[in-house]
Length: 226
Image (tube, rainbow, N blue to C red; front, top):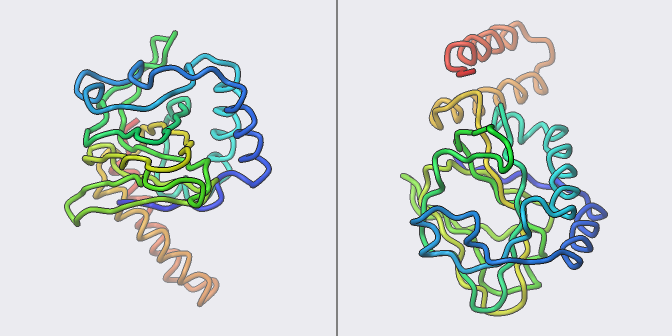
């Protein structure tokens, strides 16, 4: 399932991130790439332990904790500390699949990358190209979202970033270990939760909502991996 989560960051938060990114030191993006990804990767990143990355990462994680759509879609158990990248004219990231396991630098903690996320920090009119392209069983999907919006997609997907041909593309990217490992099961739970909310709004306090909610939690209990 691909999920567009609008307004993860406010306009003021995006401005703060942009100011921090302007002050940060940028390094070769291949420092966090696996062997296969490094062959396809051409971009810049902020060092993982830079103070600017730490401040922005905390801001994003706190915003995600308050975002109901993200919680419903991802059912997050752990969120990898957000990383930050920059694509200048001519830069790109060819087709690749993200590493299955990521270790949080400086700690023994590892997370399974069930979901990948890109949070856009440049406005679409600030650059040409730079679309995130995700391939799944339903075809090829392209995303170039407003600043502050996030795209969530299965980390098993083949994906790429098209070459930037004008301007600068800024974004945050990170991974989520979900309480529900299987993408098909997460999708069913998401669709059921959305349907429950729609029914409850149309017919408040209908007994069917209680039955559907019971089904949701029993499925979640069955599929949760903790």
